[in-house]
Amino acid sequence: MLAQQQLVAFVAARDATRARSFYAEVLGLSLVSDDPYAIVFNANGTTLRIQKVDDFKPQQFTALGWTVSDIEKTIDALTKHKVNMDRFPGMDQDKRGIWRSPSGARVAWFKDPDGNTLSLTEL
Image 1 (cartoon, rainbow, N blue to C red):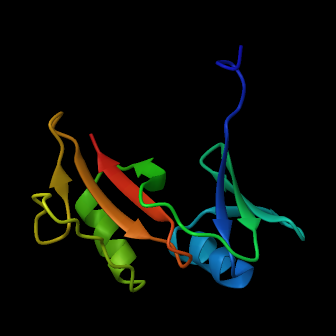
Image 2: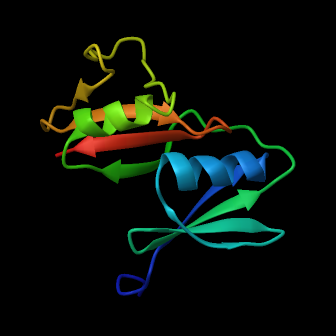
């Protein structure tokens, strides 16, 4: 039923100004609109709504992720903006924080300003 429909992704933010800056300036997403309820970005054809909320608790799992062609180059670009890659106990991550999954994909994680976990995957 929904297989041919456009997906919309959602995350929450307590500080809309900080979130708008991060998603636009650090991640490079195109701003579509900013209203009292959400900041909307175009994420390469997918609508991303950053919901403006007074409070929330970020989940412990990945909220959004991107497939990238060169994970090391992407990490380098993010670290220039003072974004740190997350490390998880028990996961064999390299010096950049990249973990190799059983499928061979290389994955790294980082957080947005509100603590939402975001990921990069190089297949």
